[in-house]
Length: 418
Image (cartoon, rainbow, N blue to C red; front, side, top):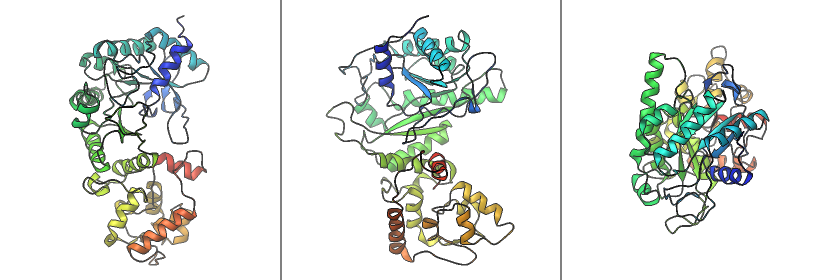
């Protein structure tokens, strides 16, 4: 048995904590006579108050990086302790933590140690050992290494449930300035390769697994000057061109000091608004151009759906008993679940505001944009609606949603309903 020492464990887990692209849902890997289970509820989720998943062992294989990304605490010119674990140490640690019920899966990343190919080879060797020698059937999320050989990437995808290549900065210009060894091409090419190969695998119904939980990526918000509109257009393009499961947003925190980086953090509210806008892109039928006009930023005062509705008051109010689903989904305060409930219930009766309240529609926002059975109880005009919504938010003591609030609020935080 090869045990990792405490100091190495501390350094490698501490170095991994800034990567937020580690959601553990969506895998279809069953236990077939080994240890662990990555199938459906095989990964029990734990969340911190700001929504991050903590159910995985989150660790770097190495923080000894040859790349010099200015925002990274493992960059090559940073004065930090350097540690590199062996594949055997990571395997033993994962199995030991799993057996103790500390974790349900593994999120494994690495700095670019020695070379992209060497780093990718070590990651591949680790996950292959876990699957074939240790018979670990639990969830594995593996970070890909930019510029590594495509054959290594392809092989790794056979053993991982999910892979991610973090784009981190929205434009090529910012990458050249802050992460000179990376390029958009070095990140997008393997993402497109994996999408193409996964599609072929599924179409041919081959035996085994090939990224059953798909791909994700991460964008750092605020490390470079790009506005929210540019970030959301990139997000929309990634969803459409690479079939990503999720884009994660990480608010910039000045963990290292460099004259090219901002001195202050970007703030959690901007990150929160981007996540809300992301849900509108994926589940509510919005385009990025609708959510943010041009190269502007998202409103910090109103959620993105509400801000869009205030800019388009000529489309409201809508009658909930007649409006099609795609229109209901655009009403502030009516989430996806509520919209489907309305569509089903109105087959049998004319809905009233009292009915909507029972369906958990957020009437403090929705009432300004709807009529129910011909009745309207909202404020008049843009100024009146803005004031009423702002007053309602203040009166309720509105804060960023927490997964430790009451059940309905927690579900809204988890599902992103607006």
